[in-house]
Length: 120
Image (tube, rainbow, N blue to C red):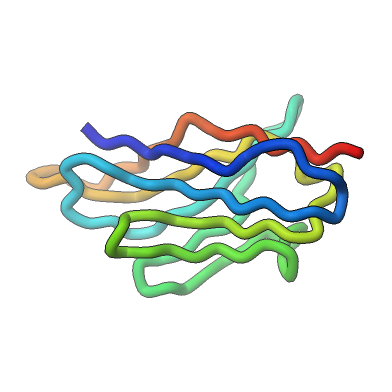
Protein backbone atom coordinates (compact mmCIF):
# COMPACT_ATOMS: atom_id res chain seq x y z
CA UNK A 1 0.00 0.00 0.00
CA UNK A 2 1.37 3.40 -1.02
CA UNK A 3 0.28 6.67 0.53
CA UNK A 4 1.07 10.24 -0.41
CA UNK A 5 0.41 12.54 2.52
CA UNK A 6 0.37 16.28 1.94
CA UNK A 7 0.70 19.04 4.50
CA UNK A 8 1.26 22.77 4.66
CA UNK A 9 -1.85 24.22 3.10
CA UNK A 10 -3.87 26.98 4.69
CA UNK A 11 -5.05 30.55 4.50
CA UNK A 12 -2.61 33.29 3.50
CA UNK A 13 -2.88 36.91 2.46
CA UNK A 14 -1.94 38.06 -1.05
CA UNK A 15 1.80 38.41 -1.30
CA UNK A 16 2.39 35.81 1.37
CA UNK A 17 4.14 32.47 1.29
CA UNK A 18 3.37 28.84 2.03
CA UNK A 19 5.37 25.65 1.86
CA UNK A 20 3.69 22.39 0.92
CA UNK A 21 5.15 18.98 1.70
CA UNK A 22 4.25 15.55 0.40
CA UNK A 23 5.72 12.35 1.78
CA UNK A 24 5.36 9.03 0.01
CA UNK A 25 5.29 5.92 2.16
CA UNK A 26 4.74 2.21 1.77
CA UNK A 27 6.52 -0.58 -0.03
CA UNK A 28 8.20 1.68 -2.56
CA UNK A 29 10.93 0.37 -4.81
CA UNK A 30 11.66 3.49 -6.80
CA UNK A 31 10.15 6.92 -7.47
CA UNK A 32 10.52 8.67 -10.78
CA UNK A 33 8.87 12.06 -11.18
CA UNK A 34 7.04 13.83 -8.38
CA UNK A 35 4.89 16.86 -8.82
CA UNK A 36 2.19 19.21 -7.69
CA UNK A 37 -1.11 19.83 -9.42
CA UNK A 38 -3.93 22.14 -8.45
CA UNK A 39 -7.62 22.40 -9.09
CA UNK A 40 -9.68 25.51 -8.53
CA UNK A 41 -13.49 25.37 -8.32
CA UNK A 42 -14.97 24.96 -11.79
CA UNK A 43 -11.58 24.36 -13.36
CA UNK A 44 -9.63 21.34 -14.54
CA UNK A 45 -6.71 20.00 -12.58
CA UNK A 46 -3.50 21.54 -13.89
CA UNK A 47 0.19 20.89 -13.45
CA UNK A 48 1.91 23.40 -11.20
CA UNK A 49 5.43 21.97 -11.01
CA UNK A 50 7.24 18.68 -11.36
CA UNK A 51 10.69 17.32 -10.58
CA UNK A 52 12.48 14.20 -11.74
CA UNK A 53 14.56 11.92 -9.55
CA UNK A 54 17.62 13.65 -10.99
CA UNK A 55 16.36 17.10 -10.04
CA UNK A 56 15.18 18.43 -13.40
CA UNK A 57 12.20 20.73 -12.91
CA UNK A 58 9.31 22.09 -14.92
CA UNK A 59 6.83 24.81 -13.98
CA UNK A 60 3.56 26.20 -15.20
CA UNK A 61 4.09 29.64 -16.73
CA UNK A 62 1.79 31.17 -14.13
CA UNK A 63 4.08 30.19 -11.24
CA UNK A 64 7.54 30.61 -12.74
CA UNK A 65 9.70 32.82 -10.59
CA UNK A 66 7.34 32.50 -7.61
CA UNK A 67 7.20 28.77 -6.84
CA UNK A 68 10.08 26.38 -6.28
CA UNK A 69 9.81 22.59 -6.26
CA UNK A 70 12.41 20.47 -4.51
CA UNK A 71 12.65 16.91 -3.28
CA UNK A 72 14.48 14.81 -0.76
CA UNK A 73 14.98 11.40 -2.33
CA UNK A 74 16.13 9.86 0.93
CA UNK A 75 12.81 10.82 2.53
CA UNK A 76 10.63 10.22 -0.56
CA UNK A 77 9.36 13.75 -0.03
CA UNK A 78 8.61 16.60 -2.41
CA UNK A 79 8.18 20.23 -1.41
CA UNK A 80 6.60 23.26 -3.03
CA UNK A 81 7.71 26.66 -1.80
CA UNK A 82 5.12 29.20 -2.88
CA UNK A 83 5.99 32.89 -2.68
CA UNK A 84 4.19 36.06 -3.71
CA UNK A 85 0.87 34.25 -3.65
CA UNK A 86 -2.08 35.79 -5.44
CA UNK A 87 -5.82 35.22 -5.40
CA UNK A 88 -5.46 33.11 -8.56
CA UNK A 89 -3.37 30.58 -6.63
CA UNK A 90 -6.37 29.58 -4.53
CA UNK A 91 -7.03 25.90 -5.19
CA UNK A 92 -6.75 22.40 -3.82
CA UNK A 93 -3.17 21.27 -4.36
CA UNK A 94 -2.51 17.60 -5.08
CA UNK A 95 0.75 15.72 -4.86
CA UNK A 96 1.53 13.20 -7.58
CA UNK A 97 4.23 10.56 -7.85
CA UNK A 98 5.17 8.08 -10.52
CA UNK A 99 6.57 5.11 -8.69
CA UNK A 100 7.12 1.40 -8.59
CA UNK A 101 6.36 -0.90 -5.74
CA UNK A 102 8.42 -4.07 -5.28
CA UNK A 103 7.35 -6.56 -7.92
CA UNK A 104 5.09 -4.08 -9.75
CA UNK A 105 5.26 -1.74 -12.71
CA UNK A 106 5.17 2.03 -12.81
CA UNK A 107 1.99 3.69 -11.59
CA UNK A 108 0.79 7.18 -10.79
CA UNK A 109 -0.34 7.91 -7.26
CA UNK A 110 -2.17 10.92 -5.87
CA UNK A 111 -2.39 12.53 -2.47
CA UNK A 112 -5.67 13.51 -0.89
CA UNK A 113 -5.18 17.22 -1.60
CA UNK A 114 -4.54 20.22 0.59
CA UNK A 115 -6.45 23.48 0.38
CA UNK A 116 -4.57 26.70 -0.30
CA UNK A 117 -6.65 29.85 0.07
CA UNK A 118 -5.27 33.27 -0.73
CA UNK A 119 -7.50 35.99 0.63
CA UNK A 120 -7.28 39.39 2.25
